[in-house]
Image 1 (tube, one colour):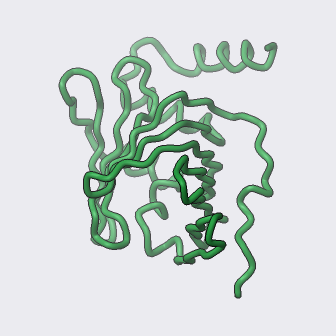
Image 2 (cartoon, one colour; image 1 turned 90 degrees about the horizontal axis):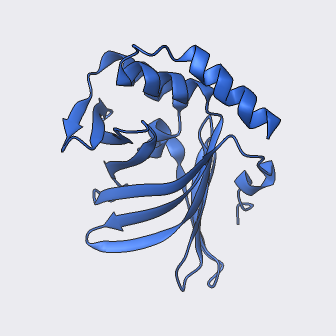
Length: 184
């Protein structure tokens, strides 16, 4: 509890009252080492949900709530999508996916510094990033300036929209969750 109070005091001093929303988003991101959240992901009108943990830089672990018991994990270099009930998995170089950019906090901060946010329905702030033939839209809640999701194209050129909720920052994380399965 004391740790939370110290962090909140630090944030209140670190974020001047007259900072722009963009500056506050950047300040919050700089203080974030990891995120835990629930998600709903929609690809081509098919939705899946689950829980994820992101650890900067470039690590993610997601547990999908579905009959296939799908997991997605990145160790910072490779991305593996695994179905537990079949035991099979697919491995991709992380740098061939938009997650390469979404999981890189320093990259996101540098891009946000260059861009002006777009106000959407007076509820969300959106930053549109173009990188290596990828269009990445990142959305923040206008009230609390927390990340609430992103929109990209997946590796098969399908539109992928991810909405996140129940966000927790800087939690204790077991680093073993980012270990990939051995190559067959």
